[in-house]
Length: 450
Image (tube, rainbow, N blue to C red; front, side, top):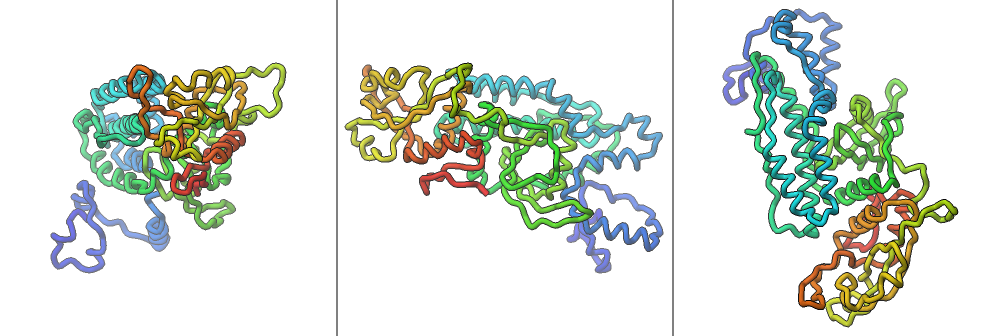
């Protein structure tokens, strides 16, 4: 198994059937033990398992069991699990990066702050003086890339999905250093990490799911969705969201269920917010969630809807979401009269907000016609408005308006979407079901992701 197929000559077929395994794990000659019938059956049963579902952490534990006790003691050989690695990385730099990313969101200098944050990430160096299989370095690299990808996605959103350049990672492998005295652990890494990375692949249709993740993230911020510690493994269903190993996961498909030892199982298609997907078994996903100390289930908040239908005396009004049409005589605007609507927020009245619309680029330098208003009570108005804008981001009006002083301004709150679809989106915000829908620009309506 240490010899590639193309270099094998005059090898019996039953031996040639064994594939080549890289990493030098099979370089040395090993005495083959005598197998009993029971041991043979155990081996056959193990070979029939889908080993892609086995976490590589197991190999780390195995290495401690098979390495000679004296060697393990002399080298201080101990495998560190991913959850324990995250306990180190979070206070080291991940938490600070997350806080800076959150603070940049919505800031008037957001573009500049995001650029500085990318530069900061590219300068981070990680050194492990007893790296073993290198798992600490690999996890550190992956976590930094996750944050970097989220920044890229946010930059793309700020450009209206029309970024003129491809985003190139500034995180170099040369930023990660490791020293290890024993080469046995590295041989394990060469094999085990190959299995781990092959268990997930790039999600080819991720653009279909990205709006769903964006909506869920903002719904978590506004409080319409909350997270709870994962329990009830048999209640993983189509359309569910989870947070596992620092990633948001969405159950996009559920295969035919089967029962074994009284436990239901099924093959899932799970989409992750870093643009990858996995074909996890239901119980394998549950195991990951149980193992992750921060594993969470995303659920609808029990505190009630985003918009109050019964107003109590103690409720605090935070403003209103309003929808208006433009009465502009600009041909570029009038041709979209039936579809074009502004979705905005005001802490006061609609009349006060639209007064002087003819002199405001926010209203396309023209009077407007009210379509609908939605009173808000006790919720984060800015985040809710942002969520609505994210839902319809693909049909945001792309136009430049000249203000009274001759400056060019590009309005951000006008969308080519029917009023009844806006009303449906707000209704789904009320009941929390918006996280399972996305706006299909071609069909001009909300469609369920399944």
